[in-house]
Image (cartoon, rainbow, N blue to C red):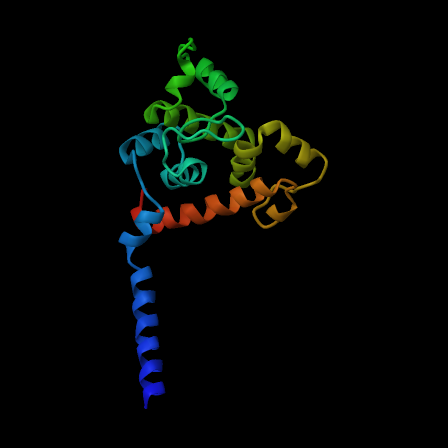
Length: 187
């Protein structure tokens, strides 16, 4: 009888844990959404899916506005200073001695990051897998992989990407985007 009681208790506990994990409020802690209105505004401005923008921010910095990577990429959307300068020039923004500090400003970083993400999508004919790989590894590296038939540029064959970080990046962004669609419906 004690064994049966323990089994039933474990089953009830398992069901409760499962139900608890399905609560959106718990998943929203894992997939936070800050700067919602600005993400929506810049996604619209750059003709991007706001769920994709939120997913990129989640994977790049986990919404930490002061994040700095090993490669010295900065801010929410993890822009390298040279890339950010190029984007700022294209947008007609001043690039001065305090420019890098501005990369930690969430709105400015999202402005530059969404512009760059949209540019990668345009440069790679709207192919999201290619655009995200270029965003992560750089467009020059991506072009090399494509030209040398290392990777065919599809989601299905992303395991061909020679950089584990970039392979994982694509998978993480895809999962995060699905979660943002499910939790926030940013359309």
